Amino acid sequence: MERITYTRDGSAPYIQWNPNLGIKTNEGHVLSPATILEHEADHNVRRIQDPNGFMEDAGYKSNGYRYVNDSQYDFKEERRVIRGSERNTAYNNGEFPLNYVRPDHDKGSFITVTSPISTGLLMPAVRLNIMNKQRSIVPSILRTLRGGGR
Image (tube, rainbow, N blue to C red; front, side, top):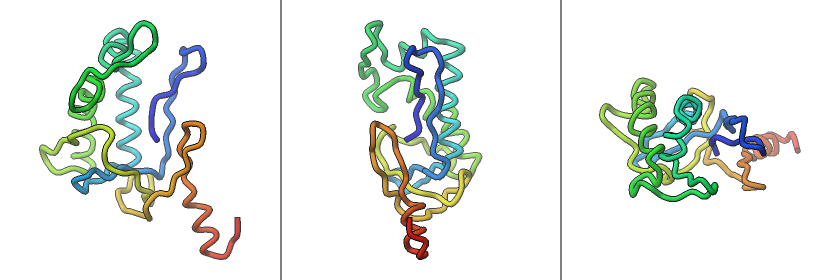
């Protein structure tokens, strides 16, 4: 899963990114891993340039807890990115039709694609959620199918 993660002291944000994991919306449109990375980068740029606005729109309270502040996207920060840079990038990359905006942030499904800039389905992603990290096990499945074992 693509997301901004912070070091334990909260000072150094970094982006966790799987270059082979896209998102298929419920309407059938596919976001490439590159577009997903750009989505996360937009959050991070705002966090650096406007930390107070980012924290407020991302729903963070001073005590570190998060609260939902947008009925459609859960957080105003997600609304800003999805309706802004994500929509423009996905359209310019040929992933979304003109004027399409993803209607939610957390619905749809992850899919494994052929490359970071592809929306071509390799096969449905099989994921293990271990300690909040997404690991694709598709490569090991493919090796097994080809007779390469583990």
